[in-house]
Image (cartoon, rainbow, N blue to C red; front, side, top):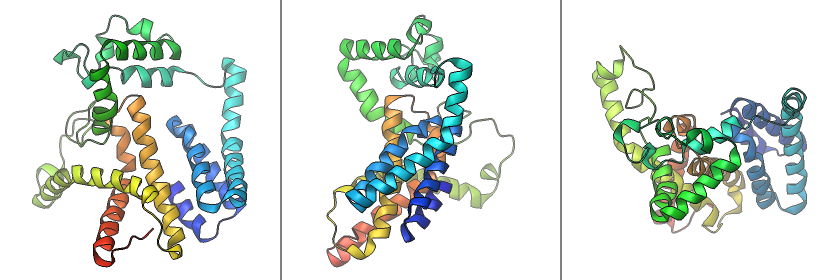
Length: 282
């Protein structure tokens, strides 16, 4: 959310210093959640497309500089203590845990949520990143349709789903003994409403994330809005694709909900604008 706020301020007065600050914030976020470490490269593409070659290169270089200045001390620490830039355990688990279709080992119901614990070959598969990738390739060759469906369709659906996979149920990760959502009518209705509209909101947010790139621009006066919406859309698509590759646990999508709902509203407004004026806002 801090990065989103900085980006909103950035579009009002873009500068090299602001680019460096955003890059630094992305670096701090990466130290908390390593999955964000590749997003600066996505931001470079957005900057080049939005600002053109010369300004875009300057802003992109500043952003990458801010990012590396923030994360490099941690990388140096890892090289000194571990002998390598980073521990691959998280990456191995991320790929390994997302390997099993429907989060089940051989479709056994008891293995749901933790199929890797039921797989006798887990230790061999998770030896290193290469061994996990080799296993993924082998399974695609053995049953390509099943795994294509899992990786391309079911994984993004699970990642953005309402219910948690590894949790107590519904939106609760841990057991809750007392909550207003089970006792008070107002909270119950809001819970039911959000559960009903969650699916359409997910669809509209992803559709909006694509439309912001493929719909032709019709008004140069909205460049600031274009940049913000492209940033949000890129963030949503980035995490969707990332969790199509690895484990699509829904709990990782919860922090993205504000961005998701904002993009869904953008999609609705864009369609409304098309119907009303036969134009688009970008």
